Length: 471
Image (cartoon, rainbow, N blue to C red; front, side):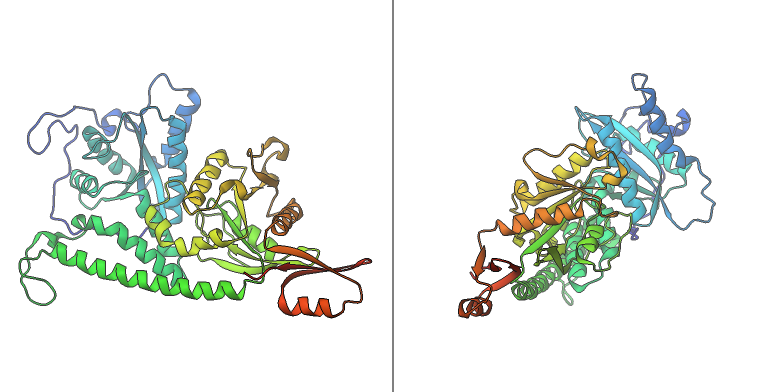
């Protein structure tokens, strides 16, 4: 993960038990994880099933590993909060996904802590006493990073950093996702979008980044009289954000020119949860080689290629950035130009990994993002992918959706998907079928000159052209 070390003044590690805070006030007295001899601080109770308890122990087992293995991967402890009324298995599943994100960012999730609370603590997010247990767990696991599954406020991060041992980084889910996007961005467009999202995220978190931010600066150079370094840094970031937004506007204008060049072909966009198999399907439909990797956000930069659907029908297919739970709104805003491929497409294929236990939730996450972009989810073709990993008959199709079961890897069901896309294309209001006699004639020549022809069909009864009407 990208280093986020803060230049803070030295502080003392918290005392075990956390009997009193810095002001001497009495706070809740909870035993530390070290004293309890468990990896998950006070998250087990007798009412849980044996299966849950076993899963918890197995997931926390990496904390007992020897940290002197020579591995260069950054070791991290994951933290989740079960809020009132929220099912615990859902939080565990979210932490499993967070562990995948940490792995993709170059780290290793070696332990985890789960706390049950009615609502997050406004100061530490977890309880004050849990901070001491978290410090002990970090020592046991040999970890120097803490990753929370929820967004933290700047003040919560600051208080956690002050309450944990010196040098421990406190990150939230958004910070990890931004790190991954920064690692994956290759094109100028993606790099600009990621930098804009990072600066938007950091703008409200400057107070924990640099120790000099509380000092007053004189009126020399770019700072005004009495202006704090914090205000100066914020002004620099605002200027940079404005510059990046202008660059994205220019990129969007360039994209619009590219779209006009492809306007004669119907546009198909592949969207879906990260690691649902979008790149594999894109490669299967277009024949173009692309990076296919069993990792979250393996590909980031959008691609568009031609694809033949059969019977002479040709379309352009675009692969887009993946969705994920709790997708940072900074990324949605920054990648709006990229996600516009889905907004402007005539047909949207929403790909879902039905072999995943939470595929219905992942489908709902994607539909929520699509709806926020102005795409009607029920108009999409739902591709139930990876049926080669399960009993295909056991995967129910979502209600009120056109659904196709397939395996992009083996090719099973891909022809059925092509046919569904073709039917959706032909149902578009700007697509028409023109019939001509076999000998052609002037009418056929005029149509070839003036219309956007997307397919030609030759039969015993004559010639049929599928055209897109000019708008």
